[in-house]
Each structure stands twice: as structure tokens, then as C-alpha cells.
Image (cartoon, rainbow, N blue to C red; front, side, top):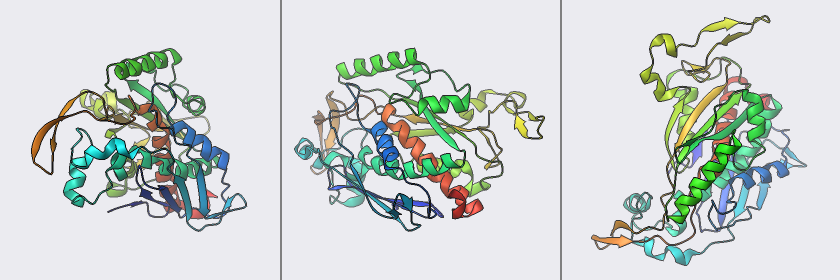
Length: 363
């Protein structure tokens, strides 16, 4: 099982939804990077459920930094973070030991782990595991911010309701990072929340699209082909539960364009800095940054845990059955996944930058 991502800066994840807790180990961070535990707590708050549009499962997400940090700074050794699970109701999941929930990993996990997997709450496949990504990613987000690199994600679309696009990118990022429901247009955000509640009242769920922008990345970062910026970001982003599509810049929109539309014209400003008039390529050419904001979008599927009766199978008996999922679930997870996308991007970029400039550059 591949539980580690990254080369110079890496993250290792362990834990299950209803196990003792979640563990994240962040390795390769230079010594002397400030670690703000209040900021880590704030990032975890963005991932936690809030209000009627989220699950009733409330975890405090109190984290313990077991190693790698001393007197508020990284020591240069692996940073181990533990987040304990405190609010589990495992009895709600007894039937899924033999039942394949539609849209979940129950059947594929049974095929791979031969019945030895921890099925409670989805086990290691649960979105609960992303708490470790957010805790470790918060350290990376802070380190990048000190180097003038900003990351922000908004709910570009939810239940078919669109948010406005990024306009003044840096100001928009600053605005988003102060919000729990990350939209750029508050009125559209209210409509999204109403649609989430409507789905909940109908015992159903909704999905959407997240859009992320990253500013401050210098030109010339990344590698062609297998270690392109797109390759590495997509690798991590597809590891986030519920992400079923990733596109960079105009993405699939390129299929409807001509070259004259899709090309980004290069210009130079009065200070001699090269820029592009448009950013259809999302700040990346040939797998390498061109100095413009890096932009990507993630498709988030509707939460598969819904309260409607669904068709499935008992995979131990080989019998068809109807099934109603029990437990506490989100009618939408997109608003909680936004900080996971930020965190994933920060970890990937720290790794790429450390490979380019050396790990001490992050200090």
C-alpha cells in the first residue's frame, strides 16, 4: 500500500475513520520554519462540519505534535501529528461488513483486503483521513506564505449553482482564506447552501467543482513529462476522496477552442517582467511554471452516503438486496474539501520547490 507521497518533502498517512486516530508524518521540512499551532487549528476548523449542511459527527480535531517541532520551530526531523478520533458510532456500520454501499470502496476493499479491512465509517477510505493532510499541509501553507506564495480555493459550482470567477486573484485568495463557506459571491453562496439543504431534506446529496489559484510561484519550476507540475498535483489531488476529475487552466474547455483562442499571448511590462495577457494554460507550459497564477479545478462527486433506499449486494452471500445507509453523513462535502485541496497543493509545491532550490529554501 502506497501511504507516502513526495520526494524531498513527503507526507505519510495512517489511520481509520473509527480507529484510535489519524497520523500524518511530514518529512523533509527544513529546520527553523515557524509552526503556528493556532493556524493549524484554524485550518482544521475549515475542514470540520458546521451547521445543517454538514454531518452531525463532531470531532474536536485536537492534534498533538509528537516530534519534529521544538520551541515553535521545525527541527528538520520528521514531524509526526496525531489527531484522535473521539466521536464514533461504529454500530451504525455493522451491516456494511458484508454490504457494498453504492459509490463507496466497500466492495473494492473486500476484493483487495479479503475481509480484513476496517469497514467502520469507511475505514482508511474515509474523508476523515484528510484531517491529517490538512494538519500537515498547514505547516506547508505557512512556509509558502513566508516566501510570498498564496493558495486559495473557492466553490466554483455546487448543485449547478456557479460562483463568480477569480478576478483580483491575490485579494480573492485573502478573502477566501477567512471564510468557512468559501465563495467569492455571497449571494451565490446562499443559493448553494439552500440547494444543499434541499438535497438533505430529500435524503440525497449534491456535488460541485472546486477552483484553486496559486500566486507567487516563480517561472521555471517543475519538470517536463512524468514530474510535470500537473502530474504531481493531479497525483495528490486524485488521492482526496470524492475527487473524480482534475483540470488545469481552461482544461476541457480547450476542446472547444481554436489555437488563436487558447494560446496565451506573451508580453513584457515596464520592469522587464514577462507575463501572459490571458491564462488559459493555468500558469503552466510544458509542465513548468511560467510565472502566472497556477489554476486548477477539481470535480467533487455527491456524497455517496445518502438515506434513500438503494440497490446493492451482500458480497459474502452473493445475493442482491436493497439497503438504506445508516449513520451521520454530509449532504455535501465540497465546502469541507476546499481546505484539503489547499493543503494538498501546498505539500506538492513544497516538494517541487525543495527539489529545485534545496530544502533550506523553505526556511
